[in-house]
Length: 559
Image (cartoon, rainbow, N blue to C red; front, side, top):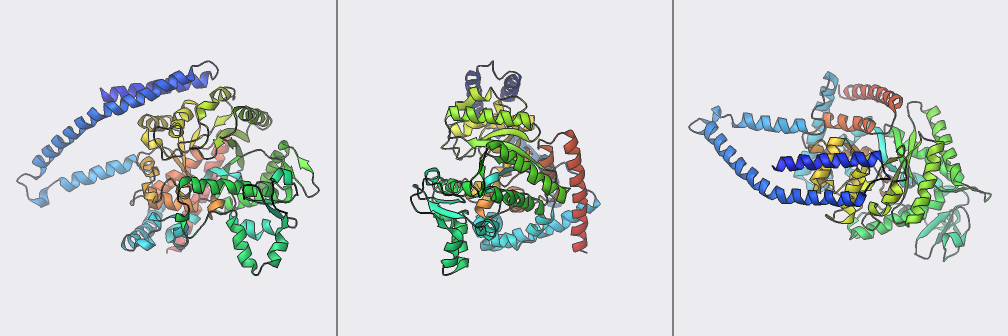
């Protein structure tokens, strides 16, 4: 009876979602959404009696098993451990990578990797101060960078990076060494006490309450340029030796969002943005990434003469930089763009931004691919506030909603997951609360919707302290579609994907998970991208070629 109710609910979910896709304009969305919420509530109520039934059934089965396998038999003849091993293997086959078949080279590379992994986990078990897998990234980073597992992952091809924000996609150390040295960079402090970096004096725009100071002059006059550079980097990096100094999620989110205000006008300076975007591509490429889907917001660029360029010009710049980068690195396959706006905006402003997106999508349908709402989800507006606007979005523009980036349960934030799926999102950003909604995670798995799991982001932004407790562990155990992503790595001292892959395989995955899991995650990044059929074939061929070279490299190192 319970299974029938569950299957019936999933069937209704799918039928409704298809109806949404077929006609965004003709539906009583909120009424149907309410029905679905009631079904999930009923499922929980039904689960209580079902769980009792399962518990009784399990006890009976265990008693029967004990009676038939161990009664009056010597221990050495018991089938207990044989059955136990079969259960473990069965569960392993159900997890991410469980069905991946390794060739002879991969089996040997897996043996090498597992040696590294088990050694590090054992060391961490005996010495908790060295247990990087269970530590906050800010404390674990030096340990990770000395890790054999990390060096292995740095060499591993990673396919695509599918969740990266433009404004925080470059390492802060590079920005300090390069962009902060550019002639003409100014700094002021606005009325909120936030440092604003810019190459133009515009007090009204920047809401400055101080005079502008030239960064290079300030650096030259400082007692120690090294100390000055460290202070400058603190403006654009959340890193601290004591992550406990951010006592609540709101404290760290406020600081995080303030950094976007600090850098926004800084990187929108046309000469700076060109080298910034090139560096974003280069840091990705150096970490064995061949394709990026980049979340961004339209912005006006400006130059040293004071000329301001309309929003359309940034697309021209992006296409020029990406084209130039690809000519130098031909196995990099390119960038596609997801238009992301702040979820705190008023409805009319969201509608205006959607119209801008539609215009850009019409001009560049294979580049401007999708839409998202970003910002602190707990404080932002729920997706239901914008349903009427979403109806107006053509089906050729895909949704990539941040949803369920919260620890709360039964609030508008985690209920955004219902709307994301009902609105046919292509992927879900974070999906941290998905595990609490059985109908939804079942639907995600059945409909093949990937979760963009960003381990370090979820830790730094206060959803989880020990990443072994991250719900991504559940998603991997259930083989729910997952792609590992980095979110805003430049704002916490990371770059590329290797750091997040470290936590994925060392903290989220089983201690016994190795190359099969890694390979599945890597190929997921291509499978769940928006590459078209021709592009996907090229991506898979490029990835396979790089993968084979990677295997040879690891084997040669370990001869």
